[in-house]
Each structure stands twice: as C-alpha cells, then as structure tokens.
Length: 299
Image 1 (tube, helix red, strand yellow):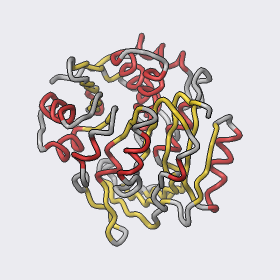
Image 2 (cartoon, one colour):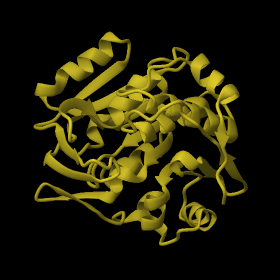
Image 3 (tube, rainbow, N blue to C red):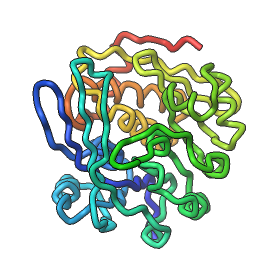
Image 4 (cartoon, rainbow, N blue to C red):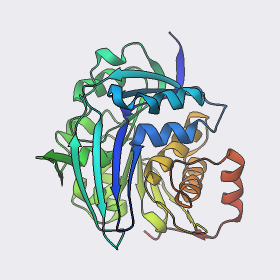
C-alpha cells in the first residue's frame, strides 16, 4: 500500500457567516483549510479523506482539480455551521444546523501515512477506536478545538474533552490555544499546562497565543515561537488550521521543532491578511520569517 507523508481526515463544512454588513456562505473546516494550504507545496505526498454530503461535492471536485488526492466518505449531511458576528469580531454566536456522520475505522483501512491529522470539528467526530487503530500506523496530530465543542439543540457549548486521559495518550502532536489549554488542564500558566498535557501522553504540545506568538513543548525544552506581525488583519478564520499545516509540513520534511514552529507562525500571518485559505508559496513564508516584525511570547 502507498505510504503518504501526510493524511488529513475531516469533515468539509458549509459555513454561513453573518456580520453586520453581509451574509456569506462558504466551505470551511480543518480539512478544507489544511488541504488548500498544503497544495501550494509540491514536495509533499498528501492525501485528504473528507466526509460530506452529495450537495457539497463541488468542494472536493475543486480540490481534485487543483491537484489534491481526495477520497470522499459519503455522509447523509455535511456539517453546517452558522457563525453570527456582532460589531466586535471577538463576539461570535455559533450554531450547528446539521451534523455529519462520525468517521469509522472501516473507512480508513485503505490509507497509510506517516502523520495523520484528525480534523475534529465536534466532540463525537472521531471515536476512540479510530485513534487506537491509526496510532499503530503513524503519528497522530490533533487540534483540540473540535473535541471541546458539543451540540445540543443546534447550539454549541464548550465542554471538557470526554475521556481525554484515555485519548491523549494516543496523540503525538496536539495544538491548543490559551482557552483550550485551561479547559483541558485547569491551568492558566503555559509551562505548567504544557507539562501536564505532556505527562498525559502528548509528545509535542503546541500552545498558540494569538498575536503574542506560540510555545512548543516536547518534554525537554520550551520553544518560544515568535508571532510575525501582519500588514493588516482581514480574516482570522482558518488561522489555527494554517498554523497546523505549516508545522506538520515542516515536521514531515524532517525539520526540527523550532524551524517548524516559525514556518507555521509565518504561514498563519500571511493567511490572516486575506479572506479564504492560505494561498502563498514556500518562498513567501521564508521571506516573512526573515523580514517581518517579531513578537516573542512571554512565559
């Protein structure tokens, strides 16, 4: 069986974004943002396993047309998020108007990869048996965001990660932001929280601090990764997914943690300057690392 460098597994969503000025319908989700970002790097063997309804197949057709290896797992519905923003962009009301079917081990048996990214959007997307199965085949990377969202009667509620102690020991690379870190560990100190997550079994803990940079912990060292100041902030949607893309791309290519972290941060900066997924080049990212104003995290 063919061995891919990277495989992202996730639902492609239909997003309805309502702001005081407009209502826009667009595709989204980790699988969408990750795939559109990584397709700009032609030196990586990448595969996407996406789950969505027939009505959204044009999204995966478009990715295939752009050269992405896509396998579709049909679902009765696509995940349908409604995000309503007020005048202050930090205030978001989120509802889930439809949910997709969870993934199954059976659907993933034909794919081998060195690194699997589980693009969880909701707490029940990936049953534990999937992590147990995939951990025997390759490294597992996860963004905690989806595991901390539960849907009750269309409304999204923040929750602690169900059976997290059982799950985290199968995860090699975990990305959390400050809020997620605190929900998971009960700690607001970055070093203490990262140490706790490591003690629970995670090998590389990525803590993103927004415009203040990020910190990566591997059980030995705390790597302080700068934020690269953007020229302007246009759209933060998908920035976390873009950071993960940069990090996993560089790690899959054999780069060290600090190098991968800087590449990830610079990619996220380029992404925030425009709407939609990242569409720069490797050279753009490397130039940004050299030239942009840096903000180092304080921990």
